[in-house]
Length: 141
Length: 493
Image (tube, rainbow over all chains, first blue to last red; front, side):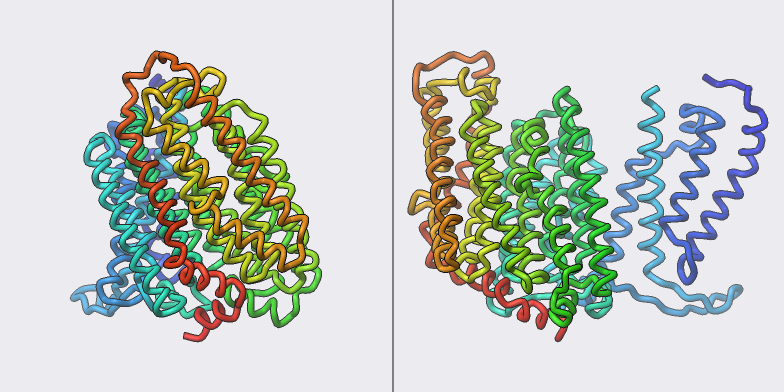
């Protein structure tokens, strides 16, 4: 199936892919206080992978990114459940999060929030599910 | 604040997530699900007892106070339904071990099964109307997978219909919630009830009430919205069918009950009259279907519609007797429908067909199956002292008190015809000349029989132990009859 017909697409994607992935990571962290977060970040990352799928084919992409997306969904779910169920240990309502400010030598004061871990779970689930769906549809051809 | 409420939702959820990793290891999946299912039952039992002694429990998720955050509320009705759901789930799970087949087990049957329980328990527990939609979706997504899993021809055909109907009704659900939000400006169910009481349910809210009836009626299969059900429920294998028949339609029934007792009780002359009419027509339509078909699955599926009608008739009468009866009958029906579907599944496993005309004389080789079926048939029709009796008695009593004589008479008449429809299966399928069937020896009848026997014993205990159980049911009915109890428990904490 590998063809060199769309050389423009392939070359562009090699560059654009990294920009999209980086931007999705930025969006993921921005979600802490501004619009963004795990869901949008996840969708954007899957978007990048889908672009890769369009330019190349499923087999090539599978060798570049040897990820089992179903396992990824499972890991994401465990992250999300784990962070929310952690509140049960402290006897506060389910899904209650904790945060604190920590001094880091170079960066100065940063705030750490358990919601980020929850969001990471969401991110993994979104990428996992989206890619599973798209791969399943793609394989049928 | 009580995190106990979340456990019947959380335990299946964690189980489902972990089982994704073990989807090729069938044994691990089986026993892990069974254990977690038992844990859910225990959590639900503790919850019921807690609600019984300490009143309605609520949990403000993520520490956002009601009515701003999402609240989970466990009153007696939802606690009892969660308990029944957990029991039915456990029993169906055990049944699945030897009937669902390795092909399905390896393709995420158990994780999806657990996700379904997350959705059902969540829908029963939530105290937020939009969150109810979310749990509906969780439940529906899982049911889409379960209905299509295995990919036989009939499953593929029916799942398209099922998907279409449910996608449309889900869209309508969101639209309805949006309408409601634009009128009352809140999503918390207790708060909605309070606001509606303040403005006294003007016409627009009655319109929304009817929209809710359409949405939940589509899921709960009332007349004339049940058209999709006989076909779709016919497709999946027995344990999935039992889950759907016992749980999914009941979520719709529960939602109608909740919205019509908590929100829209100010203009009963219109909304409840309509509900009553539809409930009674559902009974009649269901009975006609149950009598007409010679297919054992179809007969029981049409009996779901009858039961939904009976329960909603009790709700529409809206007095304390009828409500108690409805709750009693709702729980009874979840147990006994699951038992009947599982028994029908055994009959199909033995004979390889669901056509009643090709089955006869089963009782000679399988007396256990025969008598279990006989008892559950009696329970379904409501023969004392089995569990269907007291529920129907209370509903009919409530109907007479509410001077709705025609309705009560229809409920009574329907019992007779329901009895006829299941006895038809018993007489034709179990009596008569014994026949030999091709796959007879392959069916693991002894193992499969465990599940329905557990359910029939429960149903018998539920009927005989009415004295002990009635305080719990009355407590549930009392909350439904006095919305202020629910509101106070959620908002004044």
